[in-house]
Amino acid sequence: MFEGLSDRLSGILSGLTRRGALTEADVSEALREVRRALLEADVALEVVRSFTDKVRERAVGAEVVKSVTPGQMVVKIVNDALVEMLGAEAETIDVRALPPVPILMVGLQGSGKTTTTAKIAKRLSEREKKKVLMASLDTRRPAAMEQLAILGKQVSVDTLPIVAGQSAVQIAKRAMQAARLGGYDVVMLDTAGRVTVDEQLMAEAADVGKAVEAHEVLLVADALTGQDAVNTARAFDGRMGLTGIVLTRMDGDSRGGAALSMRAVTGKPIKLIGTGEKVDALEEFHPSRVANRILGMGDIVSLVEKAAETIDQDKAMRMAEKMRKGKFDLDDLSEQLGQMEKIGGVGGLMGMMPGMGAMKKQLEGAKIDDKVIGRQRAIISSMTKAERRNPDLLKASRKKRIAAGSGTKVEDVNKLLKMHRQMADVMKMMGKNKKGGIAGALGN
Ligand code: GDP
Ligand code: MG
Image (tube, rainbow, N blue to C red; front, side):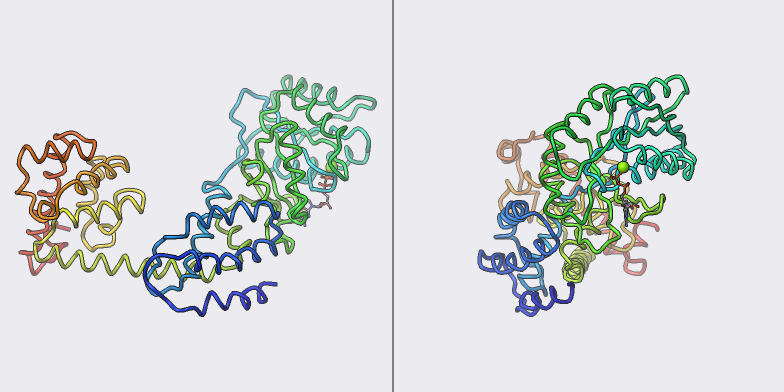
């Protein structure tokens, strides 16, 4: 499956490298292959469409990194968008509420609800030291209640004693009552499933959710169901408002397209993944790993990342050379600030240069956040070329104009100029200190 894919991607891989912006044609060509990869990974058609449209918008006009092909560049952009879409940060089960915290498990029959209920209970009790009570609300199949009781023994988590003849809502209320009396932190409610989404199933789960005011409503979905996952997720979310999704059978040969589909349709996070039948086969959801699995183009992604890194290093070397010569104008400062912005804070090129740790700390101490960086760059871009080369040209009236032009105050302009002066001074010092180099000048 993966081999065939990379064969077809040979067009993307063997293209010529080129500098400049991605054209409409570059993007369209690469997206044709990406589209195929997504469909092969079982991403729902409607999601593939909206996703590729979004990526197209983002990709056309984007700069191609040196020594990669336009097609590879598009793949990298697609990968990043995929990771973003899947959810950039790791999510966990939220049990921060007044105990006992009710967690409702919903989903189709056979999706892995009962197994996952026990897996999560085990994790909460072992890792978070929570006292957990599990209850099966499957009133139609006595065997289902028995299954949960057996799993409970296996993971050393209590299960609610079985009482015949109660409705799902009654059992749920009894579980909450027992949990209050028994001093439990969390109540895991395992609902009955159906082969397909049906009204009775939805109504029952929704009633339970309302009766206990479920803190988490987790949809358990089989990663192998692919396209169907979208309909299931949409139906459950529309009916009772999901708080998250657990994707099971990620140990199978599913490429994980269901994760993207469900996330796209519901906007709800994938909180955990099931990776086997055993009770400890439960893992955190890592967006970048799943993106790689869906796209199957990890090699291209890391190739582009490496190329981009090399360029940053080239820039760092050139900048270091300028510093050594004592030439560091406001254009250079702007570029530095741009790097910081890109990397998400103070660091960037500075962090890559030997011995720059001290200055980095100084800047961190000055609390330069992204907003400040944006303003500082705006100030610099409001200056003329000559002023950027030689800030001494800036008189009071020009500073006023620049402040107005960049939506800042004269005070901000002065602060920026002072920062530049200080940095240039340090750099001059480094230039003079030939023996010790940068590190010597900063005393580290
Ligand atoms: P329910 O009907 O939704 O409660 O589903 P069950 O929890 O009874 O699970 C149905 C079957 O799927 C069982 O045989 C489980 O062992 C199996 N199962 C559940 N989760 C996973 C998983 O992550 N990977 C694999 N391979 N099997 C799983
Ligand atoms: Mg079950």
